[in-house]
Image 1 (spheres, rainbow, N blue to C red):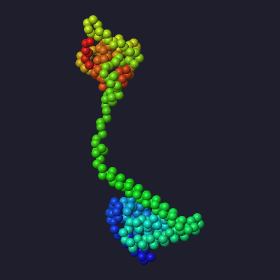
Image 2: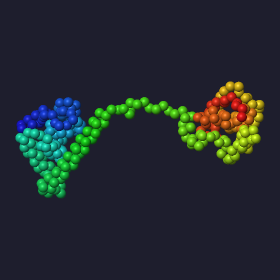
Image 3: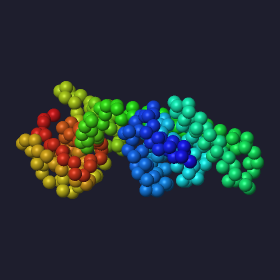
Image 4: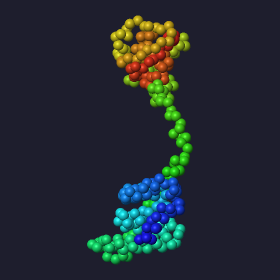
Length: 290
């Protein structure tokens, strides 16, 4: 018992392992030792587990956990695993021999604690312990790889996150982006129910404006029959429910066929020439002669 106690004490001053944080800088190791002094062994075991995440190759931490599992928590399987990890990581042959003695003792005690177990011989128990050790080693490797990946990600420059987000698109811009190139190149007649023939040149060489579909004439509100406003300078108009380009042209120009002048001046705000969105503010240019 004196030898065991001496090893438990000297384990706290074990040289720094090959992990990522030295034992002297590992905050979880200090918390574990403090909890063990207060005899809070379960809390101490949890702190040791966190300490191993920061330094999985620390022989001193594995030794301390093995002692805690065997003597206080009576977790003999866990104690055997941590003793074996200590033997693998420890550079002192004499300490390794002592750990092997403790491993055999823990194995015997584990078998003795299972009188009704189907495990009737030590060789079968050893096989299971070896499998458990292999699984624990694999877990340690995966844990170490995860820690390395997290460290690399933490050290990468956050250039993408530092860039300010792009400003939101205005409704008019997003509406224009959704239109096809064909619709933007030449404004067709704002009616999705009828197709108007292209203008035919007159004898004077001027094209004749296309005839306005009857659908626009029928949809015109009664209020549009008032005399045209005919603005002398560019003004604005807020679209109301039921408005069409032809009705607005009739209101301001007295001629439905001049809807194309309003459309050309407001292409960025009119995603669909046949369906105006109420609340859209349109620019009404000065009437141009045809």
